[in-house]
Image (cartoon, rainbow, N blue to C red; front, side):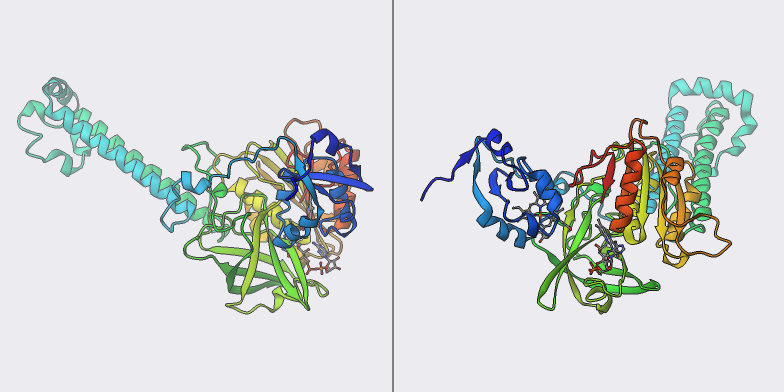
Amino acid sequence: MAEAAEYSQKEIELHNSAGDAWMVIHGEVYDVTNYIQSHPGGVDVLIEAAGTNASEAFDNAGHSDDAFDLMVPLRIGKLKGYKKRKARIALAKSITPPTSNTSPSTKKVTSDTAKYTIVSLGTAALYYGLTTSGMDRNIMSKASSLGKNLVTFAPKWAVSSDTVVTSTSSKPGFLMGLLVGAGVLASVHTLIARRLLQIVVSLDSPRYPYHFKVPKTPEFNLLQQRGWLDSEAAASAIPLAKKELVSPNVYRLTFTLPSSHPILGLPTGQHVAITTVIDGETVTRSYTPTSNNADKGILELLIKVYPDGKMTNGYLANLNIGDEVHFRGPKGAMRYSRQLCKKIGMVAGGTGITPMFQIIRAICESDRDTTEISLIYANRTEQDILLREELDAFARRYPKIFKVYYVLENHSSEWKFGSGYVTKDMMAEMFPSSSEEGSKVMICGPPGMVTAAKKSLVSLGYKQPGASAKMSDEIFVF
Ligand SMILES: Cc1cc2nc3c(=O)[nH]c(=O)nc-3n(C[C@H](O)[C@H](O)[C@H](O)COP(=O)(O)OP(=O)(O)OC[C@H]3O[C@@H](n4cnc5c(N)ncnc54)[C@H](O)[C@@H]3O)c2cc1C
Ligand code: HEM
C-alpha cells in the first residue's frame, strides 16, 4: 500500500482561501475546497480555518460520526513531524467524587458542623489536659481565686468528672469556664447564624441555595468534573422523566442520567447536541442544560417550541415520559473558569439565555468567584422572559456581582425596563469598557440580534471576533 503523502505546515498555509482550502485536523491533512459550501457548521468557519491547524476548533464543534465519515474522502495526507498527543486522562480518575447525595449547600453546612464540633471537642480536650497536668494546677489555683464563681458557666459534664477534680486547687475555675464557654458559644452562635441566614434567603427563591462570597476552603471544582457526557463517544440515549409547561411554548424537560454516571460532566459554558431523524432527515440542534454537575442524576433543559421548528415542534414537544433522547457533548469553545475575566457583559435573546444562565449560576453559586456580570436580556413580550424568577433572585442576593436589564419589543405602559431592541447606548451604559483589562462580552440569540450586537460592540472598541468562536475572543458568540 502506498505511503500517505506528507506536507509541512508551510505548504499547508499556502492553501488558505475559499477556492483552495486545506487544513490539518489531528495530524491529518484535508482538502475541503469542494466541501466548504455544504458544511452544516457554516461556510465562514471553514474558510477561516483554511491553511491552519484547525484541530481545536474542530473538536470544540463536537462533530458526530457522520462528520468523521464525510472526512474520509477529503483526506490527502499527513502533517510532517506530527506526534500524537497522549490520551486525555480522565479528571474523574484523579479526583474522588463526592459520594453522598446531599446538595452543595447541605454539604457546606455539614462540613461546617464537623468543623465546629472539632473546635468544641478540641477545647474540651485542652481543658481536660490542663486540669490533669501538674503545671495546670498552679494556674488553676491562681485562676480559681480570681474567678471561682465563673465556673458556673461551664456545662455540668465538664466539671463533674471524678478524674478531673481531685483537690480544691484543681477545681474547674476561670480558665475552664472561659475555654469551654467560649468554644461552645462560638460554635452554637455561628451555626445558628448560618442556618437562619439560609432559611431567610431560601424564602427568596426555592431553586438555588444561598452562598457566601468569601474565599474559604481549597477549591474542588465539581463543575469541571467529568461525568456521563463524553465528547469522544457516540451519542447516548437517556429517558425523559418529567415534562412541565413553564410558559406558553416553553417546556422544562428533565431526563434521568444512568445510575452508574449520576454526574452530567458538562463544563460551565458548554452545551450538548440532540440528534434525531425526522422524515428521513437527520436533525441536530444545540441545547445548554439549566442543570449542572451539582444536580446529581438529572439533565434538565428549557426548550422553547417554535411553530415551524424542526427539532422543537417536530420532536421535543411530542416526547412522552420514558422516551429516550440521544445526547452528544460536551460541545463548544467556551469553558468558563473564574480566571477567565473580571467583568462580563452579556446580551441574550429568547432561549439564548440558557448558556448565560449556566455561567451566571456558576458564578453566583461559587464562594470564590467575584466576576461581575451585566446582562441585557431581550424578548418579544414579558411572558417570553425565561428563568426570570431565578435571574431576579440572583440579582437581589448578589447586587455587586450580577445586574440584569430586560428589553421588550411589546410591553404595557407600566414596564420599567428597556423598550424595542438592544441598542449600542444600553451596552455602553451597562457593560465594562473595552479598554478595561479582563472584560469580555458574550452573545447568544437569534442571528439578527447577534449581528447587530456585534456591530455595536465593535464600534464601542471591542475586537471583532473570527467566524469560529474562541475563548480568548473579546466578543464571544455562543
Ligand atoms: C449554544 C446554544 C445553546 C442553545 N440552547 C438552547 C436551549 O437551552 N433551549 C432552547 O430552546 N434553544 C436553545 N438553542 C437554540 C436551539 O439550538 C435551536 O436553534 C432551537 O431549538 C430551534 O430549533 P428548531 O429545529 O426547532 O427550529 P428550526 O427549524 O431550526 O427553525 C424554526 C424557526 O425558528 C427560528 N429560530 C430558530 N432558532 C431560534 C432562536 N434561537 N431564536 C429565535 N428564533 C429562532 C428560525 O428562524 C425559524 O423561523 C441553543 C442554541 C445554541 C447555539
Ligand atoms: C473535513 C472537515 C469537516 C467536516 C467533514 C465537517 C462536517 C460537519 C458536519 C457533518 C456537521 C453537522 C453536525 C455533525 O454531524 O457533527 C458540522 C458542524 C459543524 N462544524 Fe464541521 N466539519 C469539518 C470541519 C470543521 C472545522 C475545521 C470547524 C471549525 C473550524 C468546524 C466547525 C463546525 C461547527 C461550528 C459546526 C456546528 C456545530 C453545532 O451546530 O453544534 N467543522 N461539521
